[in-house]
Picture 1 (cartoon, rainbow, N blue to C red):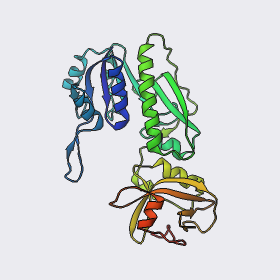
Picture 2: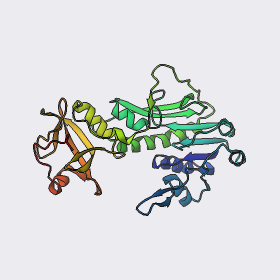
Picture 3: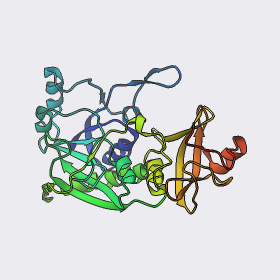
Picture 4: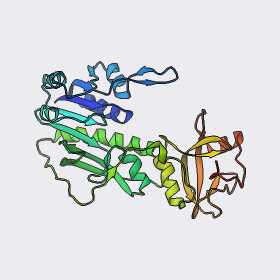
Length: 304
């Protein structure tokens, strides 16, 4: 098929590669414009943009798709279908209508649960037992279109958002290839009204750890925000991100370090911190981190 691919972050890269490997023709790749990044804050293309260039594909990075020029350029591609995954721009109706067989979205949740911007983070933070990927026919509403294919995967006990991200990215790549092969035979399933939830964009302000919460909530928060923006606490004026954790036995005053292995008491129960990152440093497993910083038994991580 002749495809317009629309995506920006790392999550979308395996999908683009899978479409090319499956023999589809990529008429053009649409991605968000380069953004300032790195120490020099120079404009840097996003992961999809960079990979598409490596693959010899045409890349377009419009700031908006609502101009007459942008609409005309998109329509002129005469695509059979557009595949959209974490693109980052709202598609106007004229764009949705342009491909002969419409626009298909790869969404990393089991719709209608977790419509919106951060479904992977929110599924872990909410304690969902499973999540998955849906291939959805796009319409004007936010992730409201009928679903063509879906597949569920379990959320493992110590799984972080980064780990689940990779699982769902690979699953999305596999499902979209299946969907395109079977497109004429798939029956769109309208999403039910019951069970709708919204995955609001992650706000850095919600990333500070509240040790007075039960251990189950603290653990979910740590894993759901790893690696970005990273749940954090302060100790003696130093901000420390926690990028991995697991629930363990233990009781004490909330925020108190219970042992050298960094078991920390919560409002009820305790969590073991398994991977940490000091401001300006690389991430380290807890044993390596402790050899360098050595947070003492009895330290109160709730005080800052």
